[in-house]
Amino acid sequence: MAYSDYNTGNITSSAGLEAYHFKECGRITYDESKKKFKIDKDEVASLRHRRGTVYIWALNKFYEPNLEIQYVGSTSDDYVYRCNTWQETLNRKIALTSRMNTIQKTQMLVKDALERGEISIWARVSPEVEVYEISHSLCKTEEDVLIKLLKPTWNGYKDDAIKALQQSGL
Image (tube, rainbow, N blue to C red; front, top):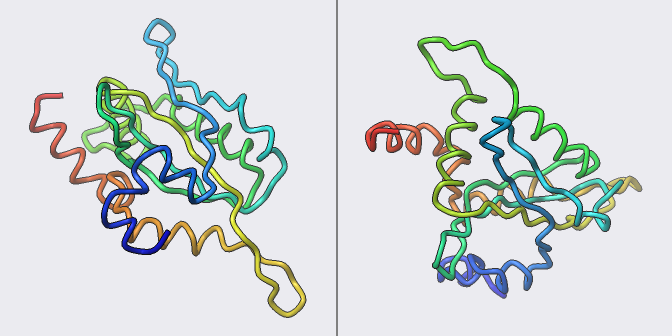
C-alpha cells in the first residue's frame, strides 16, 4: 500500500489495518454499574514483553463498515504495561474544577465514543533500525507519521472534539 491509500480511506477498515500488519488486540469498554473503564488486553500475547509498539484506537460505529480513527499512540515500554497505565488513567478519580484537565477530557471523549459504537485497539510492533550498533525502534516516528496521515480525532484535536460535545449538550 502506498501513501495514497491513507487518503482514500483504505486504512480505515479492518482489512486496511491488517494490510499494514496491525492486529486487533483488544477493546475499551465501560461498566456503567461499576463506573469503570476496562481495556481488554487478553488477545495481546504476541505483544507481551515486546517494546516499540504503535497502536490505534478505532471507533467501530454501529452499522457502518469503516473505522473512525480516534487515537494513535506508541510505547517504547511493554505494550501490556501501557494498556494497564491507560486503564488506570481512564479510571482515575479527579476532583472537579472549573477547567477540565486532560484526563477528564479523555474520559469524556471515550464515554461519548462508546455511546456511538465500540472502541477496538489495533497494534503492531514497529520496525527497528540500527544506529551506531544500537538497535532503535521506529515506533515514535511511525506514530508521528500516522497522526499526520490519519488525523485522528483525539491527537491534537481533543479540544475541538470537547467543544463539539459540549455544544451538543453532553
